[in-house]
Length: 411
Image (tube, rainbow, N blue to C red; front, top):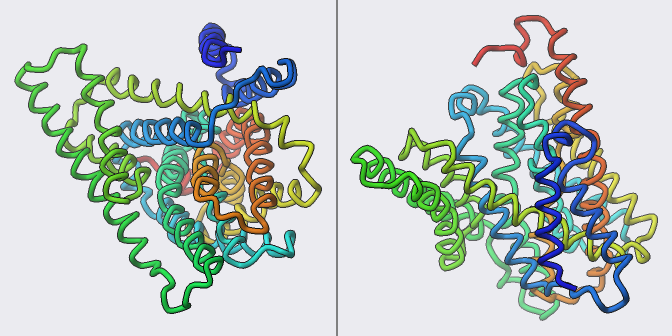
């Protein structure tokens, strides 16, 4: 069975009806995941050829890098500057608390799981995916500062999760090898390699590439047809450079997208949309392949895996967000809205595959894998179906707030 032909046919079919489903309960990730499940169930045994782990990881990484770059490159920098405390609160305080609470929940629900293995699971599920709640990010009646805060958080927290994940994996690997305690890795070195170096690469490639594109545009040297190709190359360069220097490709891509705005201030809209469209294509292919593996995983799910998934989507996410936003003078509806819309999708799939690629073979690997699958599966459907009605309900609530409320402040 030619999976590529089926997938491309689905993309074409969805494009024909995409406008009708724009604000409905049926989102593209739900549709493509469901299509993958249906295909796996209907296809004769052994006829569906599953992509290898390495292939799926490669597709997912490219898709995430392109989407992060595109999201950042058309983010409103004025809004981000005016509401910078919100993403900072969510990332600097909310995310470490999410990892800590997620690890605690894993230890309680999976008694055989070590602290470091629990940390791996929590780090995989800490990043959010704005793509699953695209309706919210694009909803004009949701306050711009809230939309941009969620978008910035989703753009940066997957990269921020990487050093934690690699650190926990390194500790587990050393424990399995009975390495000396003194040889344990330094989190600070991981932070520099992954975050600092990733940000520098993003600034260098994004700003430098943007400056060159802007200069060529002003001189009339670049043809309109080549502008989108010039832009789409930049996130791919971020990916390749990060791989070579062991930096976070996700941080590099998002920072590169922000930096390209400074270098190429009048980048044509179609150039950015070209990058976003390719990222979306890779993104949907990952959800389609994820759907293909679900029928194999679902029979092995236990109550504790579902319980952890539900906890991860609710208390593990919402409590740290509430703590991080203390003192921000936001309405309770905003805190609830921000806490709930932290979907787990492409980033968690990528980080889960990164973990499986290492083949640590820990005693809790099966529980860890099933917990990630259960969480992403529930998030695709729960967050996808609640995005449109949730955004509309929250928008109505914002309209009833006092004019001086932070949510209603003009940018």
